[in-house]
Length: 165
Image (cartoon, rainbow, N blue to C red; front, side, top):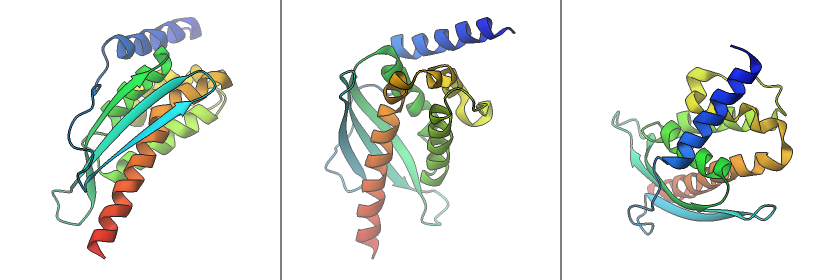
């Protein structure tokens, strides 16, 4: 597959997530102790996301938390919207630890200025954003929902650890 073919495939994946977003629409109660809601804005281009995270206790009884749901309402470009959809696919059902690792992989890809080879097993459709990393002005678009997710998840973890102390 040529680089042009790969770029076209990646553009197709991004457009598909933009046109058919996964996880869109705020769900659940943000006031629940196992949930948090944040609103992030990219002032550079006007993208906005309100993102809600729900965590649950892991089934293994080891005390680890699992990302039960991520829901969002967003306005903005196709990259920011598609990135939120990919985020939903990658983190829901994963332990918070696994999801943070995925977050770190996506962050490294986006900050790599096009030099990072994405791990398809970890990032799945997230590899489509490899080309976006070459355009610094677009990196913030792709990272908007990811930073909101990390913010909300960190809030829930801190609140539930405080309850268990």
